[in-house]
Image (cartoon, rainbow, N blue to C red; front, side, top):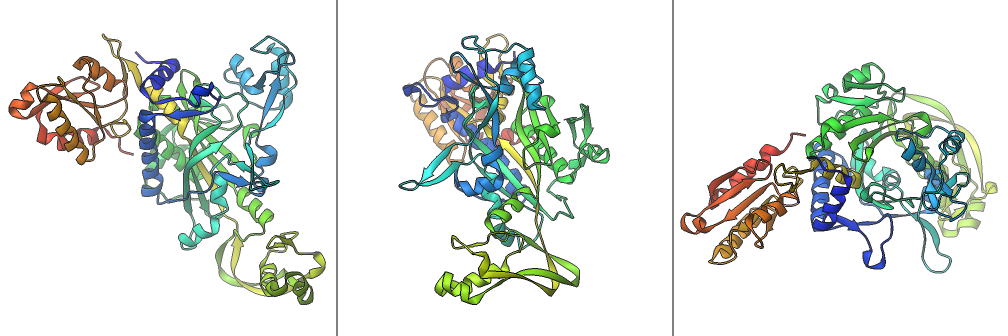
Amino acid sequence: MKMQYQDVVELAKRRGIFWPSFEIYNGLSGFYDYGPIGSLIKDNIISVWKHIFIDLEHMAPIDSPNINPQEVLDASGHTKVFTDYITYCERCGEAYRADELIKKKLPDYEFTSYDDMVKKIEHLGIRCEKCGGPLTKPEKFNLMLSTKIGPGKGKLSYLRPETAQGIFINFPPYLRYFREKLPFGVVQVGKGFRNEISPRQSLLRLREFNMAEAEVFFDPENIVWNGFFNDMMSLRVRLLTNRGEDVEITLGEAMERGIIKQQPIAYFIGLTYRFLKNIGMDTGRIRFRQHHPEELAHYSKDCWDCEVETSNGWIEVTGIADRNQYDIRQHIEHSGADLYFLKKLNIPRKIKVKRYRALDTKFKEIFGKDWEKAKRYLESLDVNIKNPVFQGKLIPEDAYSVVEIEEEEEFSKEIAWVIEPSFGIDRIILSLLEHSLYAREGTGYKVLKLKPHISPFKVAVLPLMSKDGLDDEAMRIERMLREENFTVYYDESGSIGKRYARADEIGVPYCITVDYQTLKDGTVTLRERDSTSQERIRKEDLPDRLRRLINRCITTI
C-alpha cells in the first residue's frame, strides 16, 4: 500500500530524516533540519546530480557567498520584482499568500492577472482560515531577507534568493577557464532564501532551501548544447504546453513541432528526466509544464517546470528557464564591468565607433597618482555605460568627452545567452520519499524502497544475539565492509524481525545476519529488502556480492 504525505512526515521525524528546526524554542516556520538519515540521503542525491552535470556534461563548479550586496540584486531586478501577493485578515491580522488561498479551492489555478485574482477571492468567498474574518485587497510583498554588513549603519545586503547571480558576475574568469570558448556551463549547489508569506508542508515551502543550479552560456547565434547523451532527442516525456496541450512525445518531435523552441531546453528536460529516474522517482508521475506568459519570471523568455505528482498534487521540483541575455546585460549596465565574450569575425571590418576620451588635466585633479589607470579604464568602456565609476568615484561629465573614430575590428563584443536548469533539492527529497514509501502486505510495516545508491546505508549488519561471540563477529564483519567503502548500519537490539523492519523503513537495501552457523562455517545470511529473499554466503564474498547487487539496481543515466 502506498503512503501519503502525512506518513512521510511521521516517518521522517521518528527516524531522523528531517524535522522542524529550533523545536526547543517552539520552532520557526519555514526552517527544517536534516537528521542523520536525511543528511545522507540528501548527499547521495546531490552526488548523482554532480556526477551528471560536472563529470558527464563537463560543467565547472563554483561556490559563492550566501549574502549578496544590494547592488547585485538591484541589477538582477530582484529588489523590485521578487514578490508574491499577500493578503491580511482585517479582524485578526493573519497573513496569507493570495494565490495559495485560491489553489485550496481551485487546485489547477494559475495566476494570470491581479484583477482576476481579486475577483476569484471574492467569487469563491475566501475568508480568514483562522477566524473567518474578511481579507484585505492583495498587495505585493518582497520575498528577500535583508541584513546589514559591517558596523554602524552597515551596508544593506540580502540573503540570496538564488545561486545564479554569483555565477553571472563571475562570467569573465569562467570564460578564461574554458579558453574563451562557448558554450560552457557553471554549476552551484547551495542555499537559497525566500521570506515566504506562508511556509507550509515541511520541505515543500521553506524559507531556507537547498538548490542545485546550472547556468549554461551560449553564443546567441548558436544556441546548441552538444552534451554527453547522443540519444536525448529520442527520449519520450510528458509535456503540458501553455496552450493547454497534454502530450507524450519524444523531445525531437517536440522540437520539430515547435512545442519546445530551444534545443538546450529540450536537452535539459531530458537530462532532468534521466536524473529523476536514476534516483528512483516514479517516471509515470513526472511531467514538464510550460509557463504561461503571465507566470514567467522577470528574466525569462520561456520556462518549463518539471512537476512530480504527489498526494499534495503536482509539485514543481525543477525549472528549466531561457534567461536569454537579461542577467549579463543588466550587470554590464549597472557595474560597468566587461562581461562580454569576443567573437572572431570572418572578415575584419572598418567601423566608426564612439569612444570615451579622458581630459588629462581633469583626471590628474580627480584621481591623483591613479589618473593614468583611471584614464585607461574609462577609455576601455562602452559609451553606452552611463555615469562611469572608477574606484567608487563617479567620473564627472566635464572630465571626458565622447569622440567618433574609425577602427578595424577583428572581433565583435557579444553578450552570452543563458539557459538555466534549476533544481529544488528539498522538494525532490520530499517527493522521492513519498514515491518510495509503502506498507508491506501482511505485516503493514513501512518500507522505504530507495535505490541502493540513494539509500543512507548500503547494508545492515545484525547479530542474531548480542552474546556468545555473535556480536564480536558481527562487528568484525561491519569493520571489514567499512574498509571496503560500504556505509553500514549496525543494530543489535530487539528481535531479528523488528531489526529487519527498522532497516527497511530507512531504505537499507540489504541485511546481513550473523548467527551461530557463522561461527561454525563462516557463512552469513544476506537478505534483500524488497523481496525479503535470503541467501547463504561466505562472509569473505560479501563485498563483491554486494557490489554486483547494488550495481544491478542502479538505473543507467
